[in-house]
Length: 362
Image (cartoon, rainbow, N blue to C red; front, top):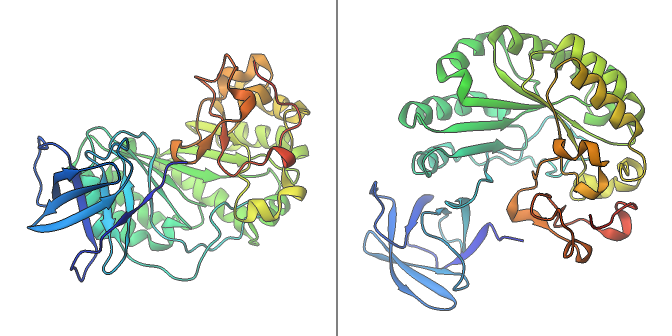
């Protein structure tokens, strides 16, 4: 597992500071650049504005171009963007207005506004970066979120964003601003767990969520926004998946992709694992029916977080490697698997004793 927090010696600062680590001179210099002055087996020393910044990391770890968020008096720094990774996500807030039974990031009441710092980091990101925006629920702070997006997108025409949202907070008054930011700059990842309101609302722990989501999707349709519908496969919605496919075909045929997802065994997902995890390695029937229906009508389908050996051979092309590199692992049985180079593996917190029964090297 890749550590997204790095031990540092605290800097004499009173406000959060974004730093770009530069082992060599950067082609686009910034006042936020920290320049390498010493490197040894367990730490690196950088110069930032004449102050010494020591980062404790193994000698083999690549840091050049990485963007850190350093907080006052804190002995660790948040690794906001890793220059050599395609899996960079900014955690905007840990607040949320839903309580999904399989949530991997259970909500918290406190919110720290770091949009200004996130904007600095995004503007200093590598060229053509694709940056995730996550929570909690980012749209609880949509005014600040839209300000952030407008600012960054105006400064960096090459950047694109993938924003995860529960779809409860879109309003008609938002659409003009979203259009001005650029519809091709943002892919909205929005969850839809069932074709029936009672099932969806029970999963997300919020009465009326399904009805609000339908209204939001209708608004996004009229706008022409790019939408990735996300469905976590669980025991709660297993029997409804074919009906959900028909709902998507008839109600949201405009979507960019329908992402069918396996659960993460962390947070509420771990607490509710026994009553929610659906082992698709031994029963693929309803998933197969749902995929076939959607594909027959031209709906793009992908399966996220599915190890390839849990998917029938003729569906594996729809199961890309999607688990972020910092939280991905492989099991002992993966060592001799011919598909390892293209398989997304397992979440770091996956437990073989409570997971898929039908695993095996390909």
